[in-house]
Length: 317
Ligand code: 13P
Ligand code: SF4
Image (cartoon, rainbow, N blue to C red):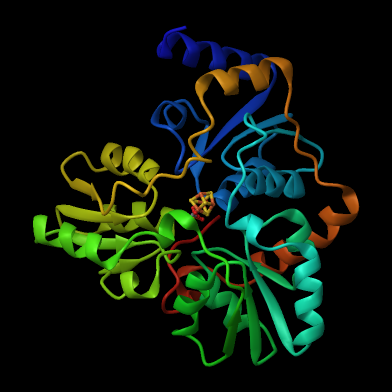
């Protein structure tokens, strides 16, 4: 089937089934094009929980569909490709957190939303790439353990007086962006601003004009007068950046910024999942309740502009 025909068919079946299509900012262009909502993982789950749809089709990776299930237990959540996992989320498990908590009982466990439901359930509070600093500053303890991304932890540690410990996890996509590649891009596009995601290595972040979550990048590109930007995050973000800013130019800092898991989802897999109602992601109730507590605690941390900590970027809801 042609792309346009497939897109129309998906929209028709979604309507028939009272379903909503969510797309993470890193999804293929043709999926972002027909999504009801596009955004970062938490933003999408929060918005979907407020919709009166019966089915959520989550075009993203497994932990994102789990977050949707945690926040919308009454809805059926479908992940078109059940094998779309996140290598960073897989670098930590609930058992490993339990061991670590025994080792450092004084630390509050702050877990990035890029983690499984089991891991969230063992955590004290969650954070996103947009609010990590506000979250760290909001906890009572003087020591925090950030899980699973060491790069986000190192970045956040620069904006707080608390002692920040971290798990040695990382996103293989962002972590492989090198200083050399960024400097080469800067030499080719000397007038462009370099915008980087906090999952990048500290030495790469040192070169950034602005550091923010994916949603923060849309806001920054729109509100900054500069006409050119070098982008330090997964290539899927270019679709909306270019669409929303037709007069501005966006260059990817490296060809390596491609997440294979994010690109597993295709229009065909979306159509199959929604037609057959297959690949349901359902978080067991016991885990869901504990994981939701960690998410709710995070959502209670003030994140409006006035309360935004230095170093944090966008607002997720
Ligand atoms: P955000 O969209 O929350 O910035 O996360 C980036 C990411 O790597 C998601 O997989
Ligand atoms: Fe996981 Fe990184 Fe891919 Fe996001 S970009 S899904 S963090 S591997």
